[in-house]
Image (tube, rainbow, N blue to C red; front, side, top):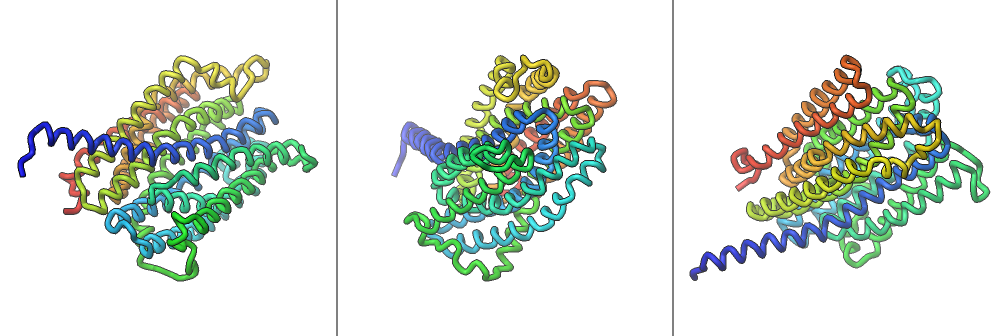
Length: 465
């Protein structure tokens, strides 16, 4: 049968159109779910800011350290998404193999969280070692003594979300996350300030609220996958106690480089927070505000990266090279377009954005607000490269490619990012602006190298024949 050039081009157009629709349907609930998770963190920052700048600075120190560890843990279990997606691509109605990956992801979560708990229990000692002020270190340690118990249910929630995302039905994670935003606000309002007849716990109350919120998310999504007709046939928690060492090792083999990559990225922002702490509480509080705003916009390309991992992973399981290409570039175009718009908004309206977190008219807040405006200007400049690097990483994970991206992250984030930032901040007197310029430089290098690796995927034989 002969096809005309017009018919072939029309088929290609429809294929790209289909991919755009599939990517959008998968990505938007993931994006909104990420946004709600970021809003939970933003709510903590907002309410702790009401307590005072030093309380906010202390919580930021503790939260940055905890998130560095949490991101590493999330990276490990992120491997479950491409593993489940590629299996579904290989065999659409696979049940047993998907359940094996899910179960071993829970095992891996338990394995990795134990040393993290031990580390974070000693937060005050760690922060004092890095030269932080005594009262900031003490309050950060107090906050984390409660917060750390929220981390395991959060990891379990992420594994559940990976499962329903691999099935391209992530809407239920979004619904649970939206409920959690309001619940977290109520928990914090009650426990931080002593409302609704509860004791006033102050900074400790924010940690307790996080525990209650993450238990709510895990419990709610667990009930959904157990009883909903789209998921119950997988019997996802069945035989939880059964060891599956080959699958457990396979998950670690793929997940550990992802964990290191994500840990390096999260850790660079944690290190930036530590450097900011050396410049004073005002710089640290301004850093927290600017970083929260940047993090909110980052949730969109992050969601697109997660969707790209699944869509690329499904085509990878089918050995569909054209499908891999469409899935990857569709996510990249969407992510870059959005971050370009966000960069423009941050450049044009910095004062209005910062006013969401702090009242700049108060004399005690003027220095913090002024610093935050400067930091946000730099954050606007790295929005685009930040979006490119995270989507490119998600595309490569769909190909089960993690080791070389890990080396790229090490070089870009730490050699370039922290190296340039530290030199500009302390050697050339740029202070906090120097640290943010370093972050932007590191993200730019990672974006270029990750995208180049994706473009060379056929030559590098990342797609098996």
